[in-house]
Image (tube, rainbow, N blue to C red):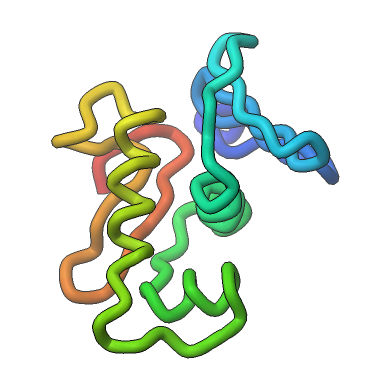
Length: 115
């Protein structure tokens, strides 16, 4: 059913598709194989996974990650999203988990569906 394909969350763990995010140990696994992530990538993925199916602006993301207002020239979120897509998306050029909402931000779709 669709509900079992959503993000399954316990206090410190999240699962989506064939991925498992361990918040305590700050690790991501794909079919029990570790996926190497930088601290920034892990923190960004955690914010996205904790807010499934919800549009998040770059400002929302930066605030949740760093707790400050984003400067207009701050593109670090976009760079981090690109790196994350290369690690979790089957086809990074046509993402199914982390979608861009043009001019507004990003949305995480745990089922890997198109929006």
